[in-house]
Length: 608
Image (cartoon, rainbow, N blue to C red; front, side, top):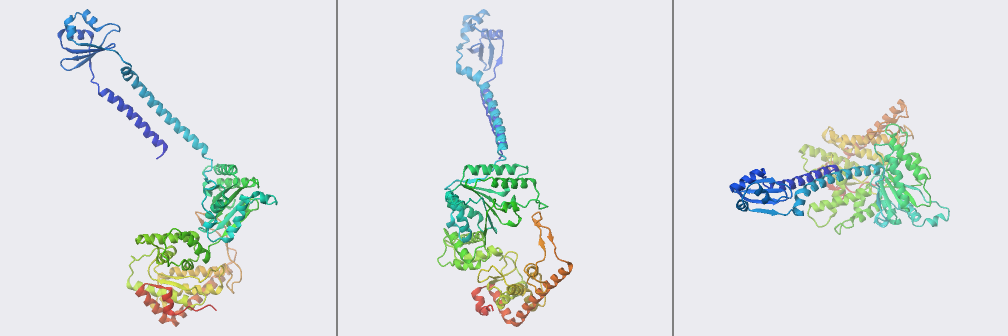
């Protein structure tokens, strides 16, 4: 609820309270009939008055018929004297039961002062609330240009390098930053200058923000955390003002760390064309550059930033004197994945027979965030089973859920579709098992996951940073194995292979245009992407080759795809019995694990 709405409610409550007070005060009193003094004398003479109460100048009359009347007399004159003057006898006056009351301070306050005081207090309260609202708006307007960075005081950051598994080289590089913050004098005596900026580069989920927090925790210094998008507003100049305020706060807290997450939100290359010339973003970037230039190297303020798009950053950000250090954080290898799993497994009741090494083997290409999500999904699955511990099955099932999506057992397939899916997946698995440079099969299933009707899970036996042409050629044949199996078994093809054809075409094109793996086209690349972003998509590519070269590229892509298809067809024809055996096993059990698959076909053909 907005503050203005709250104040309106308060105003209404105060008014209603005042109205209730006045109404209660007036309703409790019976409204008397005003009469003249002569009429009072006439009633006294007739004996129709039960009693008379005199309070100051006011005369309250209680008649014998139950009604009430009121009149007033002159100040300083007694009522009995006045009645006698008008001709009333002493007996008549005595029968009227006259009572004289002294006007007390309390009654005077209730009758005269309280209504006025309550009204005045209500008016003052309304005026105070209005002024407070106006002052709050002015204060917010003055704070509009201030940075709302989250500050973590020294000693409050609980994350250290022990909480970050893997990234050994990155931690060694950042350890120097920790030493600079701890003992700047040791370096300054040798003429070494404190690095002004550290840029953390890596894919999403690799732990860039976690490493920045770990540096602050190791150095035990304040940590200012702000996202790059928080600088940008619709008003030009606000972002630059927030940058100035952030760096002013950091200088007061030096030594400290200023961390800007997703810096590409404000650090995109200036003058890049469509979407890259926003005045507010450029002014914010200019202010960041100026502030980093104005740092005293001995001050002890280090700017750390994170991005997964270093290719779009402005060159001025990356020059020496700005971001002096660039730390690349890669996806974890198998040993690092196992260490990350051990960290995230802390506090989770795992079964004693869980093999995290096997989980690490199945999670090639997973980032630290993916592995954390994996164990969380396993814990959720165990909780839904009302189990007290997490089993190996829970973790393995979660691997496939993170990679492909949840199982869709409720998806109803006809017997014909089920048979088609079984032969399609059997074709992929058989081709992967038969080709020496293809990755080994870990699991084959015809249970639908995500958008896939079935899947063949094949994973490399070891982490690789480089791929050979022979491996790509075998991958093409494995990708088209399902297509070849459908064609051979049913004499026709279906739309189930559309995703495989798209993947094979993309892989063949990259082999020709990016990796130079075509003897006919030659060792060169084709096409250069220019950064021109519109609605989040790259919409322009610089075509740096001729139409004749495009024809040769298309011809080479066709040759690679048709060659891979012929290889797959040859495997399906030569090992037709194995194909049917795999499909029959899938139709019976729906899922085949690695051990059962190798028991069915024998060990995989080794690489030559």
